[in-house]
Image 1 (cartoon, helix red, strand yellow):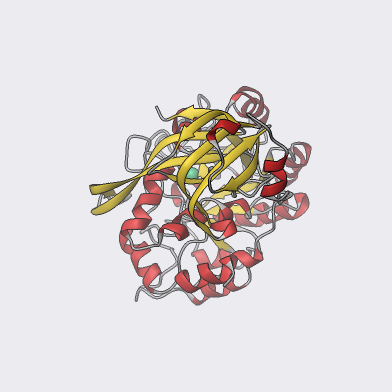
Image 2 (cartoon, protein in one colour):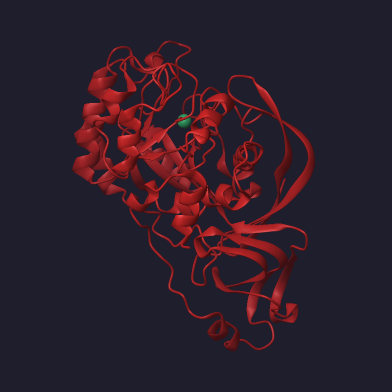
Length: 418
Ligand SMILES: [Zn+2]
């Protein structure tokens, strides 16, 4: 059974077959990699852990050897003497470095952004997408003062509105209330000039950010995405216009985030059934992401969707200033919520590794531990006990397992959990 069939059999989703493929690693054989060595032929060895790499359909005891910032070998019984540094991962889970497709890591400009590293690379998350904190007028500062200085690999979805998320709804200054800031040609130009870092576009459709302009914003977002030939992520929940009207303008490879919120105009109709437009959109390759956030993830809605066979394609946190102290905390906590909802461990990990890696072009082989990939590795304790988790509607549930970050490797460099 292929990985995709395996995912499909569990979740009923095949949508990722439609996602654009990112760069794939070259794969020298492990034997070749090992043969290259004598003593200390590896820079680092993550030894003795349970390796889960859904991209390779791998779940078992393995050692992960790293050389020159890349994965060199994933084998059993690699002698510790062959590595300059050893991380003992006995009793721990070892995964590809996690990928969070929805965060806000452009701090000091507006109310949302946080510093990435304390919440990401120190907690098992090696790559994040900033989902629209910056726009055409602010991206240069994001690039220079944040992305280029962070240890976490950051890629950006440029907000179609040129000011990005400099204000929120509290001062009643939603970014799409004044359409003069929404110039698709401007967004497409900045994206085209920064293709190494900008991997798509973002736009938000909740009434407090748009007034009655949301559908016009969607049309302009479509123009920006088509002009730059990049995917588009839309934020849903509580929109002025019904969700179906946005969906009609979404194409294969575009992403819906906040998919499982409990606000009006979501995926479900008043009888708790999936809108036919949602089913059709998944069939044509539109992707459905979690984007937990402070207001956008409901255990009840997620549970109903799982029961209908509609699992998320990707699991992301929507980490920002107002949720880092709960209910989100970080991506590992968000992933833990899916274990309590009954999703299998490998399917949870897959949605924040291989699946996420295929949504955007990250320009590097990530999301897997296949030899030749970036040496991005997460080491977690899968803690057992009774843990209380809270959704965005302040509803709590008890889980029996929790991902606790221990060590992260990013490009071969080691970060201990804070
Ligand atoms: Zn967000």
